[in-house]
Length: 278
DNA sequence: AACACCATCAACCGCCGCCGT
DNA sequence: TACGGCGGCGGTTGATGGTGT
Image (cartoon, rainbow, N blue to C red; front, top):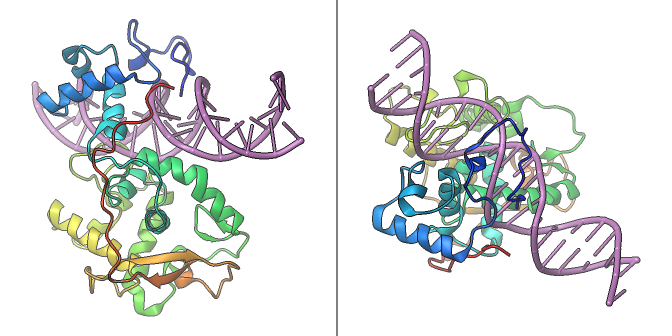
């Protein structure tokens, strides 16, 4: 948490939260109550003007962040389960630091939470195992062409090409050919969907999203691309002694089929806000 | 008990894309 | 087409609590 009275940026700069009279730092239970009540009555959106209308001495960004990351009923708090961790690893392997995109596929978890968990746990874990957390490849290994990094299996040629592009997308965010603006969300990252639109530029947004979902599922399930989107989710387990020949498609993890009876992620709703000013 | 160091994570910052004008 | 406002993103900070000495 930041010092409410200080700013790391130059004093001349004025950010939304540094405006005179606006409160910064940890939220109090009272502020949370005001924000939740207001949004329950009026809905989300109009963040810039929301604080004034709700009677909060906060900037809109701060309100939005508090709501999105903590107060939303759908936000799942608490320990990240093993299967969620596994999913994060898989998605990060495919998407890179696209936290919002990763969070979008893990019910109840926010991009901030996943980002924190990655930096605090998973990144170190991979490093300890001798795996480069950026590439998910063994550290100090000879460079491999990106598409081969992702899927050296010839039978997965489409997969290789597509994931290769995603790989580039994760590393080269300035390449306009590898990015498309997803509907509704702005910002770098956001809801961009990598190079999927290269599959068929005529697809509607929803269709593109469907294709993307199928694509991700097929990759994560180790199936031929686009042949199935309804397979049981698979789990990944890091190998104790990483070897170039042990890797599942060169991706760094052993693939283990998840039991068909295993329960899907079920967000624990209304577990109550936490993280109030300590 | 006191201190130092480390880990965690809520919150902030700066930037960028989308969209309306 | 250009511009400005807004929403949203990833990166980073720093307060707090836990653990080790």
